[in-house]
Structure formats: C-alpha cells, structure tokens
Length: 310
Ligand code: MEV
Image (cartoon, rainbow, N blue to C red; front, side, top):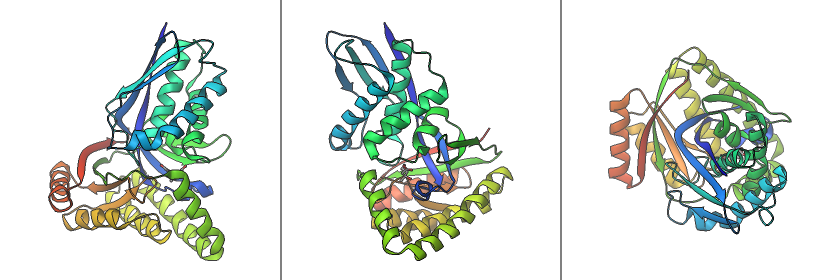
C-alpha cells in the first residue's frame, strides 16, 4: 500500500498574532506545497527531503517528531505495529513564515488517510493538521493548517470549529516574498506577545481595536477589488506588528527597501523576528524590480508569486 498527500504553503496577508486572540485574519495558499509519500516498510522511517533554509529542519526536529506523534495518536495509528516509511518532499522551501509546519502536518494527514484508507474528509484532515501543529507550536490558532488544507484566500477566525470563509476577489496580488534566512520559534514569539499583553492589558486592547478595523477593511478591499485600500491595511498591519515587538531590524529593512523601490505595501508575515516579509506590487514588472533591489541591497533570497482570488 502507498499513500500520497499534499499541504499548501501559505502567506498571511493580514493578521498574524492578532488571530491568536480571536480576531479574524486573511491568509492565502501558495502554489508551492509539501508532498508526503507513505509506503510499507519493516520499521518506521522518516526521510525528510524538503528543500530548506539552512538549519531549519535541524532546529525543528524535536517539534516535528512530537507533531507526527500527535497526528498518529489522533488517527489511532501505531507505527511500531504497522510500520511505514514516510517521505517528505515537494517545492515548498521549509522556512519560518511560509507555513512549512502546517504543510508538513496536512500532507502527512492526507497521506496517512490514503495509506490506511481512513475516509477522512477535508474538515477532518484540517482537524488532524491542527493537532499536528500543536507539536510545532503549542497553541496554534489554526490559520496555517486551514489554509494549507483548503488553499485559496481565506478569512479565518479561530474557534471550535474555526470560521473559514473563502474570500473572492478579482485582484491579482503580485507578491515578493523575502526570506531573512533566520528560523523563528513560533511558540516562543507567541509566548512573548502573551506576556506583553499581560503586562500592558489596556494598551494591548487598544492595539487590538485598531487591528480589528484593519482586518475588516482588508477583507472589504479584496471583495471590492481595491488594491490601494488593501495596501493601506497591510502597511497598517506591519506597524501594529512592530508595536507588539514581533518585527525586527531585518524585516523592517526589507519593508523599507521594498517601499522605496515602489511596492504598494510591505509587511512581515507569519511569526516574525526572522522568517519572511511580503511586498505587494502593482504588477509583475514592479515585483521584479522590488525583488532585485532587495537582493542587491540586502542580500536576501526573494521569490515572486501571484495570488488570484477566484
Ligand atoms: C504563524 O504563522 C501565525 C501566528 O499567528 C501563530 C498562529 O496563528 O498560531 C504567529
């Protein structure tokens, strides 16, 4: 028997961290994905062949092990009793900020579903991915596994069950994704934000209020095909992320360089304090220029991509 499954990479357009506090966020699936292949073997084996930012897989190894164990337990699978070889590959570069952990979990859930003929539907795959994400980052909001399962552009609010709505837009989003090359620890960064909130509750509530507006206007911008309004919300979102201390000097430099070279908006995306930044550009020529300026001036790796919302 063999089983194969995929999990999409993702980018958060609006709302990382704020989503942890029950506020809505907007994320989009990338075409890049992780693929998991499972085949019978004499003993359990994992071959992690995903391309990576140097050091990522080593740094995440223990979390990944825990994550896979949680998935096996959730699905009632004992790899000692029914051993298999699990291979992870695909074109999604394992790095912080791109939903690599969620894509790992979702691809594994899908491959196990096929291999063991479990008959799970997409909602159940998503729940299994969510369980796996707990191994990587303790108390995930669920946004990453949701977009990794369903793809597309989604409006997400955490909960049991979470609210997941597809956002339709005619906009074509030309994005430059820049990788700082620094792996970040989501559990630690989310924990620091929690401490900040406990220390300054009233101030934090004020930030959350400002954020709520950004999320609603961001959704409206997509649904009314208003690129300028979307850009304003993404820029505003980055400022709030700076205030809650999850950006860092590298991410801020990328944002500044992208803006100076003509991007409509730029922000960190995902956990922050490393990982990735995204820049929204008006067309592919502008995206190529922004990418080349970032590479020349800052030396970071960039990738350009286009997201369409239909
Ligand atoms: C990480 O991609 C997004 C965070 O908001 C954490 C989460 O939502 O679980 C930082």
